[in-house]
Image (cartoon, rainbow, N blue to C red; front, side, top):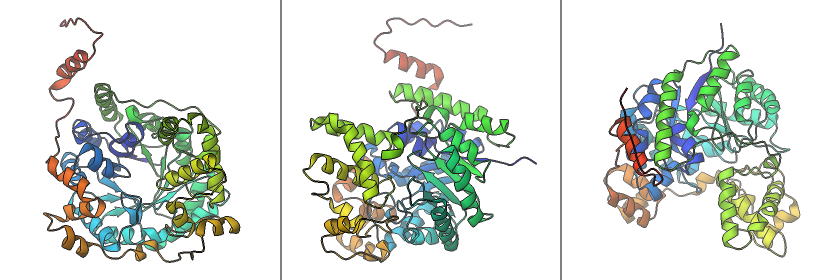
Length: 477
């Protein structure tokens, strides 16, 4: 009997976060989500990472409403809520009462699958999110964030997986946010984790930044991974994920069973192609291999933003020096993983070091907090002299970070209430009054699809937008 490989679709969350700066509207999902629902995926990723925040600040769509709307359009496949553990959707830790209420509202708004992770792999930061979610019946598969360093060994990841199993989980996924996994490493890493988690399913979530992602995923299923996270081809590759269609075909060629209907996925890809052209959004193309990527480990989107910021300061020629320094900063600080928020902290320190007269002459408060243990465990060692320079005499923090945050909900109700719902209460916990009021003033989400009116009307609308087309002839037959 051939081994069955399952797929989780990332098109509606991480794929557009990678390629469209998280700007896929709910309306854009209308003609795609029902197709993905029927295709046979294990689950569909919907909200998490930057999506919640971008919905509020830039799209002016209530993310809770997006969850409710999509749970009406997607009825056969579980929808995933993806969180940063105790930080939920932000860079800061929230009180336990906020995290617990958030889990309740995930369920109330139609989410059935939860994939939390902690950016430092400090399992203490997953205790409240995991236990509360599972108590509510959410299928919970936490992630271990992968990076390449002398301290992030297979033994390290096996130990972290063992801690997750002790929490009580429904599976474990390897989260490779910078696409650093190689075909050689996955051959040892997957079995090391699988040995520890036993019959619990092991998943892989990787990106294509190094160009190796699709082949790494193919190797993974031969060495213990049962579920792979993929994206519809239109929004795959580049900084995104392996394409569902090609990955499934490659698996089948190797003798694996993949029960995803590719005709349906290809229809979704075709519709996304039209939406992308109409909105002037890019589609994914394969990346070239770059050895330098494994030194700085910074995602492509962040590099382009950094290049722009440096150029506005008149120091655009310092980009390579900053990236070189970023790799050194990471080593100096005990190898924090280059994922939000630490990607931002590392790059900020790198810029300061390159532009300053002395390395670490200036240190952001967030870097100091990290060094002291304020975000969780530091994986590697920090040189004692550098630690003293950054810590400035402050004592290390050894408690679970979330336990240091006082309960927040009663105070919020008293200071900013009353609220029409617990969803609004949580929005107030996440955002200042300015952002909160701006969102509430917009009203309900516009769910109009860019494809409304059928293929012909969509085609005509697109042609009208193009000034170089002066005439159009339509013939039948």
